[in-house]
Length: 337
Image (cartoon, rainbow, N blue to C red; front, side):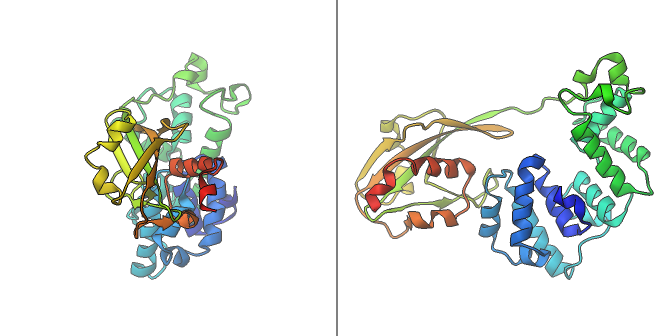
């Protein structure tokens, strides 16, 4: 992994933020893309947010990118470009929690602060036979204290990386390599045959179903309409087609009669048709988005519309990106040629 070959605090921070909610296999390409676009923290701080979000497109959890950009500007403008060098100071960065602060402090600044991520939770729960839920208040406190007690203070960075790698490679969630594990002689879960039951996690997540009806505008002069999402919900500051959210799937007549239609679309004669293959589910951690794309022909041009050629310049949710890629396989764009 490329971030294992450096002690550059900016690069380590970037990698840890990417890996907060992303697998290594997917995150590596984004890490390399970011350090190529922004070789220094000053480059990231001076970048336009829209460009940052565009590079992040497809990784999900976009608040990570916004927090990364915000903190880069804070470090450059308020800290004179000097990355914080202690756990407590790193923890003050927006979007940085205990795990990320511990990783950076130990790897880059040799501070003995134990990292506790999913891999470490799994190792400790199984080896010591701990059934306390890892996402409970008591579990978070107890596992952190135990990890800190086990910390090798002489080589904290190496110790933390070794713990995470051991969990990822040896003590895996499914089918761990117990038969060749060097710790199998003292593993409580292996002795009691409870490997598959540990670690314990409370199921607090209630999945919310949402129905998104996207209005894909087609103007006579070959343009479309994109709106920027505002507020604190999902995909903040990303762009999307005009959206009608409903409590259930809508039929064509219901879309045409929707109370919000006039405020979303430019005035003019409207023809609307459901795009085949719509109503696909996009699964997020706490909600499932059921998206339907409606092809909307406007009878007149509109000054706020953008050229389809400019679409690639806008950061969009991955489901919008995938839809447009699918649209390219149809004859939709041939009418503009």
